[in-house]
Length: 302
Image 1 (spheres, helix red, strand yellow):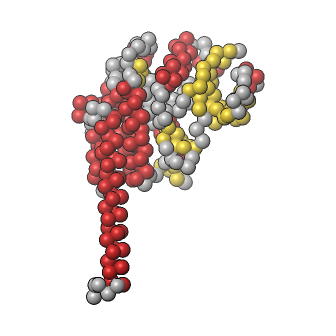
Image 2 (cartoon, one colour; image 1 turned 90 degrees about the horizontal axis):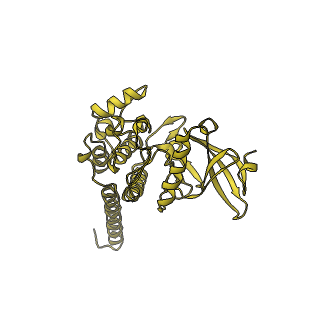
């Protein structure tokens, strides 16, 4: 049994699976708290490369002290297991939030703004710590129950720009083709934060239109489209998307990294500022109507 091999934890159930690991909900016996334990898949244990990537994931995530990132509590290797102990986030992945009756549907625009702005702030922190996520997608964004706050997870293919011993030829294929930047799809190794900004644009496109910018059936086709084809602009796909939100997403999806935002933090005020102005205008309009009603009732307006 898994709980007999991970000392100090009582496993409750499996809660997720990915390309490298299986995630279990577990109880920390000593601290009386629930945690998530990510275990390297059995068929990958014999691979030194995958074992090192698992260690690298734990190290990189542990050094990113940000509330938008799912925290790492520990790492272990024992009894034929390699595992990461992580914070347990109550909620659901963004991929589930996007589903309605089994189909991907757009999210409300205010919710999309909040998610994109929060993720941009988290990416800004990671990038300034020298870490590029390289696999931003709905499955790797957890939405907290109640608050809906997004928490970024799974740094399994993340790149450390300061010191990454795994920057070699085989690193070219890592990532998810639907969300790869043109430079990542082309196999470039020296990626920076603007690659994640492109993936954030793909995520935003999906949230406001219910569709990905490109459709393809295999990696090579996706790579070709990301590298050479321009996506249909957001407002040509869905006319009612607010212009400022559409402009942010379209700019994130520029082919040339120099034409995107230089840093993820630049995105935040463009989204949150628009929301504040919109809510302020609504409030002013509402107060104006109330004032007129009070005046009319007082006989000041005839």
